[in-house]
Image (spheres, helix red, strand yellow):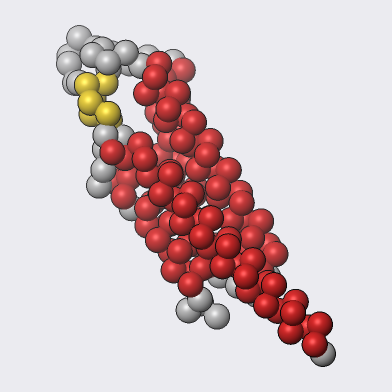
Length: 143
């Protein structure tokens, strides 16, 4: 049952979360020899968490495709992916608003909108999963 529409949506969500972050920039940084980032500062730790959350979202999307036997679990994992992407989106918005424009960030990239696209795709997948679950329940009532 891998050929269902929700599998395509989840595959696209994993491509958006795992692949497109390497294509589109989140932001372009100014590299100067004078500017040294403290490795344990709040910004440095947050900048290390963002790619990990993108990769976690992509891996969970791939794993969810293969949970087609258990639609309820597939639906719950889809909601978890949505929560991860909402947290990621909030983190990106927080960083873009708190980092000053010319000291570390010169230009915000389109990659900051990738979590929105991933959320949209997972919501469409969850809608299709719910539709399949309702169809199975209606057939079970007829037996």
